[in-house]
Image (cartoon, rainbow, N blue to C red; front, side):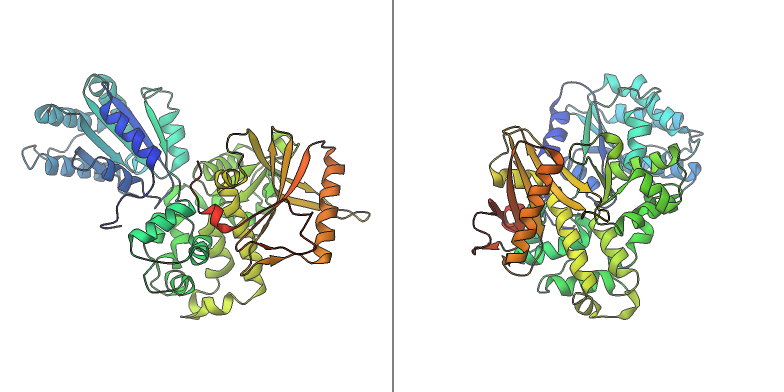
Length: 481
């Protein structure tokens, strides 16, 4: 992301700036999935202010990590600090405190420890060393210590909820998520890539709002051409990213991938018991840990069905790239250039596009609520699913917005290349859906049928009096305040 300004991240920048301006020592944790821009954010916010920085090396031994630490220390001290090999992390952090004392300056010092899970190898004593550094020295200094990691669940379990010397030491927590559609549009414009919103939506559906992925998009090419190059060409970044993604974040990642694959094939999502059944994972706490790790890292989402309890919650695949890889890239990587043009004419494309668009809508609920004029009204979002049997059809509603002003928005999300026109048959289906929802839930609230489509709804005799609100993708590209 060379020469690209820091896009969005307004709240996150404020948190980092407050830590810098605060009169006390601050320890800031920055958590977010791989490639989401954590390092870029910290370096941009603290440009020219970082006094020491180290990035953990993946799959390195404790001795290699310690050697790397001292090489960095020697570099930041411009060679004035000896490259003595520390015997453990306690001594390494002692050397760091001595270096910072030598460098003391009027403004706040900044220490940046990146990819903490890689630094903290098994039984290495790294967290003990960090606790010693913070509790015995840094807490009494004019300093900001930023700790950063892609393995979100590891960061939360081992650092944020640390039971030892780091317990309650985190002063500010920052969770970095992928870009929204609006931020993606801004990011591409900063790269002088001028694509329309429909083209950007296609790109987002394939790779999500991960800045490192979006940085691969080239100007002068359509969304289809870019997807073809980035995802299907032999040297494309996303051609084999899936195989690296989960193994870089999780130990025994095969189990995590099993869950991802199971969810990729089930549009309505799966309950925990169904995940166990389909993946053949154990019923116990190991599966709960896997689901928790995928949730914290943003790869899956958990939704409570309308009127149900936590035990009935449904998990959905939330990572656009993983869904796209499993449906298209995995089995078509060897087909060569132009394969995406062929694949986008298939029925599987239609099915995938519908699911991907729904997932994007669910991620942009603040934008939908803003467009509905209910940002200030307390509301909860959920889905509704009633299994069918021989006597009656099932009922599935992917998004309900249940509002405190006694209204429920029943949302229909449709991805289409033009305006959507409701036919007589579709109108009848929708009326039956609303009636059955009211009957099954016994709700007394007003139900507004809300259409969310790419290019809007064409008004005709079947939509008038049926659809209460029609939103387009333009609303999804708005800010979500």
